[in-house]
Image (cartoon, rainbow, N blue to C red; front, top):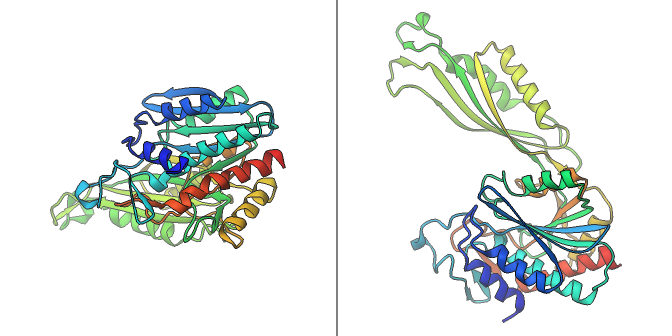
Length: 376
């Protein structure tokens, strides 16, 4: 059994449903300390974070990952136990196999190999892990980034091991992510009898023109490789359960996925002004998940393009699609960020899995990136 497969199985066997780390980071810290890394455990609330470094000074290259996983769902839906790793027909099954304990295992093996081959390497290599990526993302990398900002911690390049590949390992290089902004809108009216609308104020009727404007407005035409900003309504609720009652309140949840043409404060101000123009009596509660980030052409993108082309046999698609990742907290520190990882077809699904061949290729991929960036 290969070293990375054995380590991935050890991690999967720990039921680290977010935000519980279930001992994953302690296991990895012990290994990395044995390889000469300095390890710092940073616990905030119920969340464990690990910062492991080797070397000093710049440039600083960080491998970013998470040890928490989403709940497995109904056990009976799985072909095998979700936290008992099993290899069948060349495929490793278990919760977290693809998202992202496979990448975390590959990170650690690659780091061990790198410092063994280059004990006096230039700059710093580091591993940053959290147990709060799949959850609220409050006390994980967000809090660590705040601490790094306070310390003046430098980060030049960040490689996140999220499962980015689509059909085969290395076919996609993620070079940015959209921002995410969520809103809970409450429109207040006056409850009454449907037969006497003059004695009531229907918030549904009042809000419909504003909601139509929100749903149909073109926000922009895109940015670089980013698609246009999109607003999607995810829930609408009103009513008392009786068909003869005008509701007194309308509640609407919506989310914006936006490119670097915008930031959260500008979007919030734009939408609040629009709702006010419609004369609504409203309240808005915002949740800022993270701002967009984009890595332009430079050493990191160039190195990743070359390495992935060697792995996949063709140049990778360079994309800013998908949802969000913890790199959104590292990019504002001044770091260039990319995402490189295994095929994402089974993430968060029943019978999550990763190809053993892909898993065993990952340490070499990350090792090649480290060498190109730090050793040359």
